[in-house]
Image 1 (cartoon, rainbow, N blue to C red):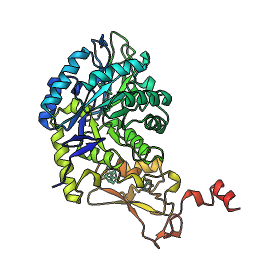
Image 2: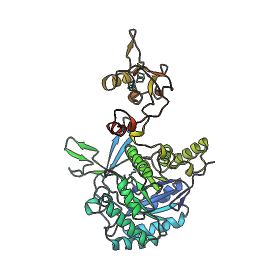
Image 3: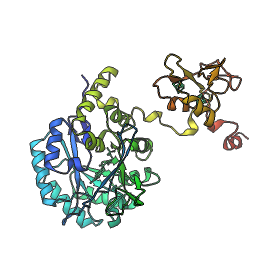
Image 4: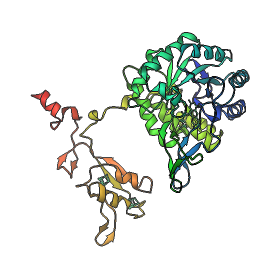
Length: 436
Ligand SMILES: Cc1cc2nc3c(=O)[nH]c(=O)nc-3n(C[C@H](O)[C@H](O)[C@H](O)COP(=O)(O)O)c2cc1C
Ligand code: SF4
Ligand code: SF4
């Protein structure tokens, strides 16, 4: 059976599934129940200095739903913990003592002064926690006070605070990054320069999830007003995975441990993050929407898949997809694919035809010999994949590559065995200049 035990920057846990710093981890009661269900670790809800922050008493969450009312995107305007520091520290120490095999990481956010960091680090060390995560990501409320993403958007600050922490604690330091930045590689590089043991990402994305059109106020609406919040859940997974991959393949940060976060709901989501370079994963929204028991599907699903594929440990999976992430200019322009419609599966809804007809390459019929029939016209199809994505029947349309030597009816050329990319293409001005 596959071994899914995890060792992330020296922090051991029975599986790679941690709960991210958020409401699921904000008190002993929650964390103990999560551990009972099997979560491998937690990052405790972000601690700050006393007196604690104050949350709004009106709605603090918003959401975007799919047609089946499934939560696709989640938004919050919650702050860090609003409980006394000593209460949290006492509970952290107790839970760690009672659950020694689970990872206990403590998320921290204090003003950007070395003394403030020094004194909270000392207090956290006394709890015997396994590590700390620096919350440089929270995009609302705390950032206006010069913390959270206000630090995470300035690489020099990240480097400075990471260095302070490394100098003042024996615990591994994980820097949690904000996605509210143009190029994620810069803050990740800064974390590495500051000596951080790892980065975790993503925190939430600045967002307004909706507008109440009766009151003309953003949602969630607190007494007629709204504010931007942090977006998370399945909708942010593609953004998060790209950022994880960017860090994993950047020569300056390659090899730095990454804790992957953002929309992870199933074992497959987790495996995808790990393949792109995440050593473990953290989950928030899925636990808030479905409860702690979802970890069972994650544990069983991951280990069944690993057994099936012959992966023995997480090391067989982590970063395996990274060499296949490349820049656009290196994609093979001699790879030719065409859409194929399985007539037995087709329900003749016509969506593929309309999509291709109106916005792609007019490559799908709607009528053949006076009969409603949907078929790909190879002489027009550019293999764009639009029809595959709009077809409501899974696997009804597939994109299939032409074999080497086969005729591409659209261009009249046979498929070449050579790999050819934009860097050497005759239409590329840079390639032309280099050839002259
Ligand atoms: C209600 C809520 C509160 C959160 N509070 C914190 C926090 O205190 N500290 C922190 O680092 N991240 C916080 N986060 C961000 C999550 O830890 C996580 O990075 C983000 O939600 C993306 O993961 P997900 O898509 O699995 O939810 C919070 C998220 C939510 C939804
Ligand atoms: S792959 Fe693109 S071009 Fe080809 S049939 Fe589908 S939508 Fe049209
Ligand atoms: S979208 Fe799919 S099911 Fe509908 S007509 Fe096209 S191939 Fe058939």
